[in-house]
Length: 525
Image (cartoon, rainbow, N blue to C red):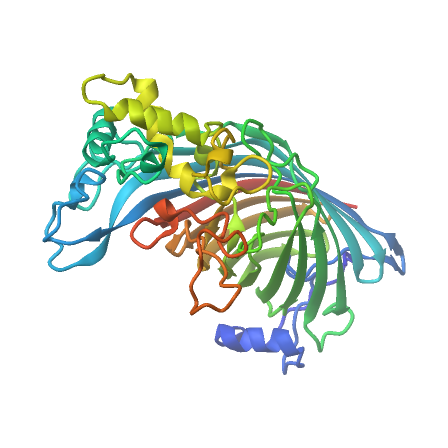
């Protein structure tokens, strides 16, 4: 609501200094307060554009907002450390440390960075008194994921091809194959080799740089309503109820393209409240997000044993306060400092992740089991040195343990002869565990008039450490002692790969910091 109102100086300044918890309680239940308060517009999170309101028949807002987001993290991998057993030193030479007793340890593998530059154009229309309809048009200028060998681990060692378990050197792969592959040319023996020095994707040189993705993203539309409004009844808080729908309008991000869409329908419900106390306006907001996979997305049901199909649900809580140190209501001028704290819970799900572009563009994609077996046989012979291309192909044996990556219908027995010429692909999606996010935000907004505002936005968030390769083995469909039969297509999870999903092999994201800054210009009519 944008009706111009006169300013009345409150007399209860001490009440504004009460603990934040009291402010939130007052805002939530809309209780009257025992002091006079400023009749200003609601906080940004509860402000609703309206129409058909006396001499203000229609309101329309447009707000272009540019945001740059930088996400950085460390990706570690867990390893079983046993001081009495050095059998796995070729896979991870850094395991020759004294872990004291048998345990699972974590070692740095990669540094991760993602930079996104985006312009969102928010458009808001007043429908009726305290009811608005809004649209958001997202334009992504650039979005790129980059993975590099980790700079330093806990032992102050650089990670490189000599000790990486993601992109090891050719010599390590060759030595492991020659030492652990059975000395036989039979294809069934080659399907049961014991080497574990794999190359998942390349990290050499400047690292693994995904495509610079860009284009029109997933637009959002929604409706917001103020059932209680401080401007209409100064005994109540301003309450906002909202519903938003994110449409999968962007080109879906896949291997080999530059799409930025997720292929997900998102339903979002929001409850927010605020209360003005002279120079302060505390607020809080609750949001629940339900994602539903689109029919043409990467989120597909590929077998009865699959445990996760689509992204997990999300809940968000935001609270904070606007500080208004300067205001001239008669001219519509004011300066607002908005400080907020946030908490979010992301449920487990199958989703895009830091390894998405690297896995979906891996050189292992497109190979068949027979090609990989032939390469292993060629590398196994110490008297016939294999070239780099053959070694690289042999190091792709890891994909044979994830039958859901077969092109077309799932293949549940990749070692069977009839599937020997079926090419394998990894779509880049991974199952992740649940995690929480904590954040803080700061916005400085100047309103030179009631029709224009200019804002500077800053934000920082931290994600809890969490595993990003956690696909379960499958579903015990016949209640056989909670045991999943890997040779049963009705039980095995087609996305489970023991090389990355089993305990002792999983990847975990740690030290995640998400920093964003942005500028916005709001035009209010």
